[in-house]
Length: 113
Length: 113
Image 1: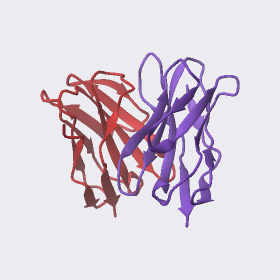
Image 2: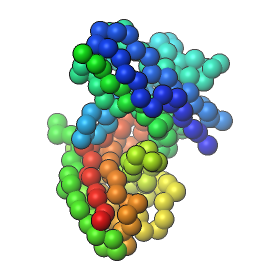
Image 3: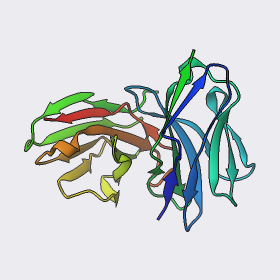
Image 4: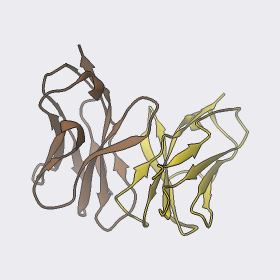
């Protein structure tokens, strides 16, 4: 079975500061990795995904993530956050042979003015 | 192209009642997955339907059921509602079964009193 850990339940950061949201996973089989964002009263929006190839993945809204196989991590970063980045962020994995997503518990990012 | 539509957006029910939620996938998508999101348990997979057949099921009691119609629209039903069923129910559609390219709807917020 797969599991996803997001160590930080809440991350407050000032506007224009950098941020890193941490994600670690465990799986006995190959997985694909994803980051989703959820704004209040909305569904999930895909930020970025890692399927294969370069371990540094760039996504929408200036976010990027780096896949580290040895540390089984997929941390999300943004060099300069905006107030509009305030949302909940979910890391997720799915088996490469396809099935359902397994999501982490989420990290609530609060960007302060 | 229209996104995933979920109806109703908000619902209030009483313990013991039953409820039916609806999801219309993106045009051309044939797979629909359902997820339950609660503050305590996070995002959990309920089931996936593809071509009117349940392909995969999460670890939920039999009170939770679903179906898919020939036009790929899906409904999920929860019988004998419990307070713990209060949650945001998210639907995701994809072209094929087990696809990692899933597009989420805005969700239905169910409150059980």
